[in-house]
Length: 158
Image 1 (tube, rainbow, N blue to C red):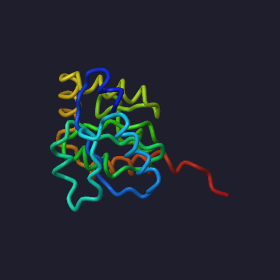
Image 2 (image 1 turned 180 degrees about the vertical axis):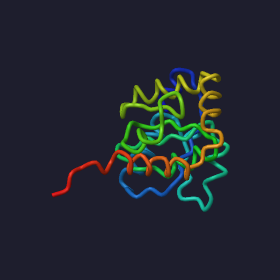
Image 3 (image 1 turned 90 degrees about the vertical axis):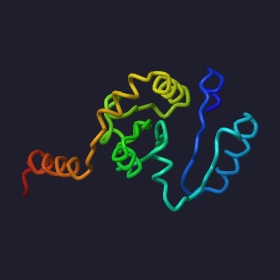
Image 4 (image 1 turned 45 degrees about the vertical axis):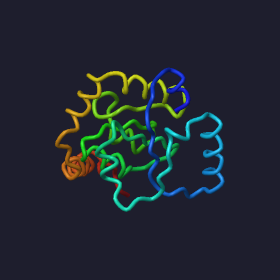
């Protein structure tokens, strides 16, 4: 976020969800304060209903170093909100770069580059929103399941 601010890209970042690692949480708070981001980066913690926050966001960031199937990505797509995610197995299964979301390397420079590009490109935002409009997770799951049946069980058994 500091990289974005230094490039002139101003955003409000809301972090939803519990913070399981208390030590990491404290370190992040110190870094946020050091970089003078405390007015723009807010930890909201666990909220009863995250969907109004997601629905009103420009994008949802899922910047995990490991993520299997991410329900957050699925929920954001159902709500028609673009996702910016690191290239975890779950994100790669659910997003196509610059078609149904934005995929980043797990590197702060690449994340900042991709976020800046997305946030400054209204046509790209519209394209992704149009491509995920009407997203239905059951259709995707059924298609994946049918592909698995068609292609995944071709191993010989002894």
